[in-house]
Length: 226
Image 1 (cartoon, one colour):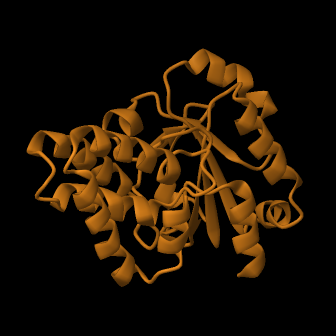
Image 2: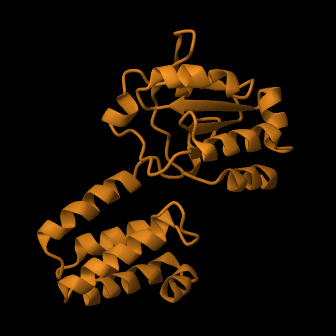
């Protein structure tokens, strides 16, 4: 934690070589390297970590892949994790996909209108999903934008229990577009990395990612500030 506190205060071009040196130092001992990877994952990638940072996690994975002291077999996992982390990065276009509404209509993310789009991946019956849904619906910042049509909300269920999804539909806030993915394209094609549910993205009017996998409070603060 102390090391990361220092890293977070450094410019990226200075932090990257420091992280590489740390990986190289840990890799001289297999047991130490395994422990280092475990701690790095927990601090930088665990959704519940207060120090979670995709930017720094990407650099950590890149350091593991680049290290001449890490066995090639041990680079398979960081390569897969890096590929997932690089999907739908802030500043890039959000991966487009189809969804199906309760009426059977097929929609597409790119066709939603609004100055911003709030993309929510959720699961029926998930307590934290319900909290996020209530938070958005009651937000003095977000709710008026949604009501006026300036912000679109697309809530998508990506798993295959469509009975549970339909049963939960009456509990979803009004004014939202709520869909599912019966073809399982989002999961099967790994269009989005979803380490935890709920998972929120804030997109601009051109469907470029502004915030990725962000807490609803951070999204609200960004909208208020901008």
